[in-house]
Image (cartoon, rainbow, N blue to C red):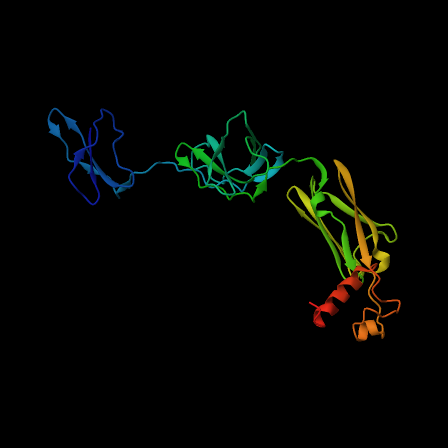
Length: 314
């Protein structure tokens, strides 16, 4: 038998192959091109009239790359690795999936291969797969995505994970002492602390006052907590501070791995009462009333300095 082929639309016929049986494999075709074929039988007496294939045939791979894997989820982590779990592609492209490529990127870089799975580092269930990605750097942000591979090639990448901070999974609370200083306010003014605390899981906070006990949000106080990857932030606002609000506040941060406490002092300065004496009316520092400047009240010093300025003393 003498099969021949030609590009479609028809060009010059060329011999594709020969065979002694009524079947044959034509090689050397160009992927993506359409071909037509004819077959002739040959014996000692000569060559028969050819028979032709019907519609043109597209030269293509009989199987395709897999479809996109499911979005990976981070199911476990520590300060050097993450464990990802994802769904298998809905379509394997007609060929078994040989392996998966796990890619990662940090906050400022591009995608590159972090792990190629095999039977040792990848665990499979009926619908899901799981693998641990080592070699991460603590304190860096990462994202991950999955590519499935079969004999035809690579799938489209899966959706990437949300950004993940490489950190300890279990970490006892550590309060940022630099944000935990004492405060001084005048009466009826607002005092405000916002303090960060590392810890995993994110710590839970408790505020205490020696007179008011455990604090919660009400008309006098606002207590807030906001979690982030690797810790949480607590905020305490003292509204319209009263003399009773002064004292040493205690903040405790606690999670399953431990707890930590710090003390913070609040000083509330009394306001200056109204007075009709010469000190207030004429700026007379020689006034002998009980509110005159004696050197003991810092707010009186500020007031007299201001009076000096406006009376042309400076």
